[in-house]
Every structure is written in structure tokens, then in C-alpha cells.
Length: 56
Image (cartoon, rainbow, N blue to C red):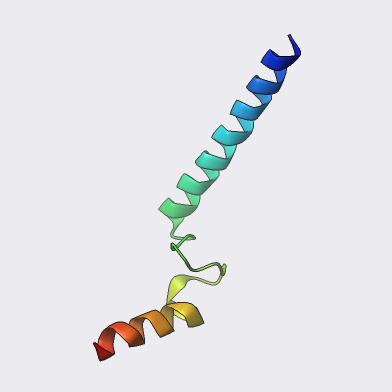
């Protein structure tokens, strides 16, 4: 019985995390390797990636 309860709780947590990730992606709040919450266009890591691509 305890295993069933833990499994249900784990499934609920995983579903909540996935739903949050999908919602963030739809809102444009996630962008792959960029870990900042300010948006991809203003991230320093994104600018470096773009400058490397332009120079090739």
C-alpha cells in the first residue's frame, strides 16, 4: 500500500513539472541552454553563441 501511495505522489510531481515546462515553453520563458529568466535575446550566453555562428 505504501508503494502505491509513493508512486501516485511521484507521478503527480512529474506531471506538474512537465506541465510547468510546457507552459514556460509556450510563454517563451525557456530557451535550451540559457539558464537565465531574462529572456534569450538579452542573455550573454546567447550573444556569444550567435557571434560564433556569424563568424563561421
